[in-house]
Length: 286
Length: 304
Image (cartoon, rainbow over the protein chains, first blue to last red):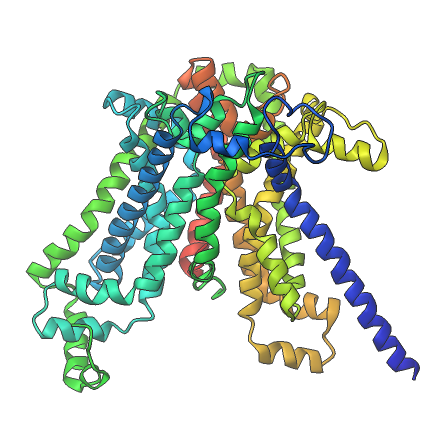
């Protein structure tokens, strides 16, 4: 009897523990997000309050963002387009270079392929921000400052190593004999890459593509250093420009931040399973 | 092209062919050209945009006099202390929380799945959006946090970002907020990969709760935990955004870390060589980390 009671008590206390921890986690997770939403809903000029929720919530600032209706948002769609272009190009090139390289190393077993793998590994463990200063100077010498392609180049260089690992690792699950028999049937390496390798690798390509897109969307430093005119800059750079001025239109900034955050959140939840699978692929072999 | 049947694959003649080819070692002429052509794009990117900046950076920061100037700078000394604190607390608190939470999320039930979906939200929100929000939230006068403290407890909260220690604490907390979900997912996947039989056997043998964790789960997770910690250390060392957006290095340049100080020296002070030197002074920490990590990642094939 008492043993059963002890079990029951333990279950109750366990449930209470789960409840408490759940509440703590939800509050912790949502406080900065709540703050973002709250300020974005303040009507203009009402940001400096001590309220916990706007007295008159309004979507004025979102409307302002979408219609570029504030001096600070003059080039919003242009900048959003730049961010999008950056993300798409980084994703495409990362997938292209990553898949070609991993095909050559993992499937064709090119001689000295491990050297290339090591270059990739080394890039993966060098902090990108440490290379920002020399990279900036090199781009200036090439006359590529203020050009979106200089940022694309940097981000592709830092995203491809991860692509190479994940694709090579995933490729191991596809028997090499598939390639072999296609070879015997007379397929050229390019045909094998296009018609066999890429279709079979589709799940890993989705994972890697999502990674590259989110990397580009999250990146700030290179965009900040390399893009300085209003028409060439991306959304994060525009946001940062107003962070330190005293008269920042905070409600517009927060609305911009939310609009900027929506695509990655949508992508993240759409591809969540694929992404975590990619992130942890072979993660616990050791 | 796609429909290569298993019967074809299994034919001994092909196996023999594979074997002989691997004994000859390497590809036929035309194929070798293709293989090289496939690697060239990435190699070109690596050489132009990684290797060249590395070499150029090493050259920029190669003058010993730069380091004398750097080490004499009181802001640099503060920065080193900040960087060490940021690394020690940011990495370890985050990883330890992730370890505990990954165990929490192993509990069965629908609620846990829903909670996990909510919990990973910070990872999905772009850093810039999140850190700008936190920056304003911590404003001493109008920030949400102090309003909340006042409404709930009638406490006048401090001016978080106007004092070095609270500002640094805010940066560290922001980092933990943003990245704990990611590492929790990694460790959760690690826990899931532990075969069910091992857990069941352990439970039958009386290894449950804390004992199960100490004797069964943690030894099996230890390698992953170690690699995650090392990777996280490197990532955090290169982190620019949390400091730049949350505290901005202020007040009075007292919360910089090496990554932000380097950029400040190079661009705000227009002394790129000094900036490179600031970053390079982390090499005594970076090089051993890189060597250990490269060895670990190569032998155990962990990908994150």
